[in-house]
Length: 320
Image 1 (spheres, rainbow, N blue to C red):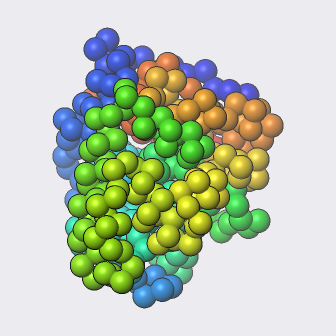
Image 2 (cartoon, rainbow, N blue to C red):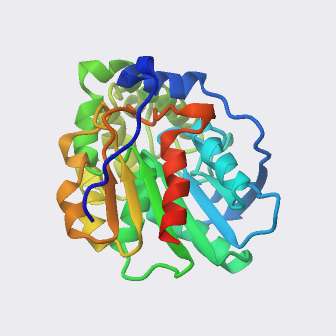
């Protein structure tokens, strides 16, 4: 589809990508979302925790939310859209990826940008156990890439899935990895790395034969983490193989349901390839919106409802 002209106009101070990103990650709070946890067992014996919140009226509509790197179902960027959709008669479920719900997962593997088999397991469980005839997907950052890959790599998806919305999608993982390693992103890089390595040390206690102390000690960058852990734990040759095979960019031409990508032009995590103009113009189901502002998941707007959340609800209503 043609590129969508964005109407997003943030408050003056939050036009700065760094400020909007940090504010949204560290300051924003979302109140009034009551979540109920469900644990499901995966195909390999591992588990994923789902955090449900419900509309006040009975509904056959559901929003499935996927978080970003080292996120979880309680992050404001998850609870924000859950609350908005609940208030508009749509149930919501926030998916906690393996190991992200406050308890380490059981396997050596965990989650990664391209682990669509886990998303498929969640969707299959919901369709078989619940009574929803309309399901919408919304992903943030890593979760956005996963949704776009899931939709484009499969010949057939369940007909209950009607539309998808993604924000701050790193469509080209190698480009985003390189961006995260630049000096301007050092604060983000180091924060992510600290969390990831700390969690890896916990996991290592149960999998000493898979990961040595030397391996962990040698991780100095996010690229090292992907080279030493992510790739090996999930069946890739190395970090570059992981980035290449897991990037959603190559799958965008095959998406067959209405799908909106909202990527801010001042998002310092995204490389030029993460703005798939050609793919959007050539696929009638793919809509691309590129606001001037918003940073990485920093689409601050009025009344604590973020622009990407408001657009998600609009998009669902427009397409149905």
